[in-house]
Image (cartoon, rainbow, N blue to C red):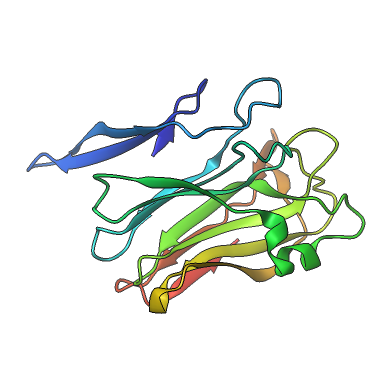
Length: 212
């Protein structure tokens, strides 16, 4: 999955093996979320939180990203999802999570900050054996600028996941621990780099592996 750098329309790519040595990629679907445009009239999307993943059957898949859609208008980045149950032929969504809904998120906010939760700028996502997504991303306090984050304060890594077992339709936020630093500089000619949350599954999807 990728997006247009101006409109942030989502491009869902499909790759076909050419039979010898390469994959031929083409845009299979296009999705345009109803982004919140209240900040300078343009969508705000954390590009490095944009992921697509499927369950072991290849039929149940999810897209995840950090952004905001109408009508919330609070100028914070939240988890946004799209879902397919037919291998990507059709997609349902958007599904937007309100960070304040989760007790664990509210309780994890650093009291030294604004305590208005927003997502950081990089994340990962994988799909388990039940076809449910796990979006790994950190949460901190929004700064004085729209969609910014007070990175001098303590943040928290969360697994935002969906549980559909037994016919339920519930979203959870699992606290995976504190994050003391969002960004660092590396090398003799310093290059800034945020932390890189990564998540994957075992082959059959019954185990999840996380790293921040």
